[in-house]
Image 1 (cartoon, rainbow, N blue to C red):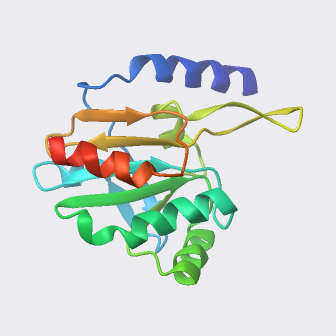
Image 2: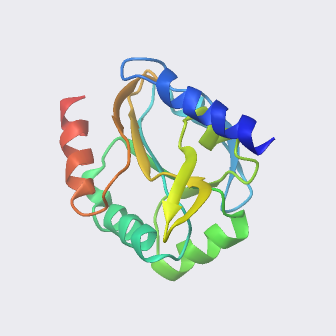
Length: 166
């Protein structure tokens, strides 16, 4: 089964292209409320960012960068996604005063649709995990920009520059 999931993930990575419709999903946020991507269609742009794990250094830096720049994201919904539980997301939000929703994808449906659940290597070990990635989706539900393998430093600047072009 693990091999099949991995192959599906690699397939999804090849399928998602800028200019295509963003895959819709419905998943729970930190409060246990259902969030449906298509509910933002016609209303807001969406910054959908995938990160490996709550409370870790890189993920905390990335979330706090989005938090600190929140006023610059007018007309845009920011959604963070990881495979952490809603309860863990709630602790992360409370600890760092994050003003946006975090989506819990414990069943890996969203990470697989977006092709970000991939084989990774760390300290010589190979394992499956989220490859930090960001997708900018316009009000019509179109993938305007895909940032694969994101480096946290200055990422918010790249995202804001892209949003200005939409």
